[in-house]
Amino acid sequence: MFLLIFPIWHEACNANTRQIYDKRMNMNNRLITAAMVTGALALSACSSTPTNAQVGATAGAVVGGVIGSALTGSTAGTVIGAGAGAAAGHEIGMRVK
Image (cartoon, rainbow, N blue to C red; front, side, top):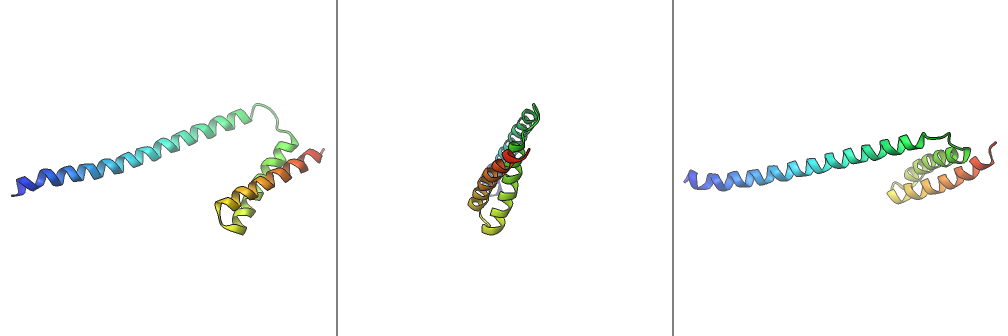
């Protein structure tokens, strides 16, 4: 009786283990890709000195995103806050000498 059940149980166990392995590999691949893209963007951003408008837009986006997230607690609020902050920071940065 055991010999008849064992191959079925063993195959189900392998299928579940394979699914878990595939999910982990997929997450690892995404993490590696995100790290490579972030590194490439960081290196390309260092090619020249940023203008005041660029610095203002970056700072505004960060501050606006934090405030939008704190006020709404949602992703949409964070994105809207970051966009508004970037626009405001860009304008302020253009006027600073």
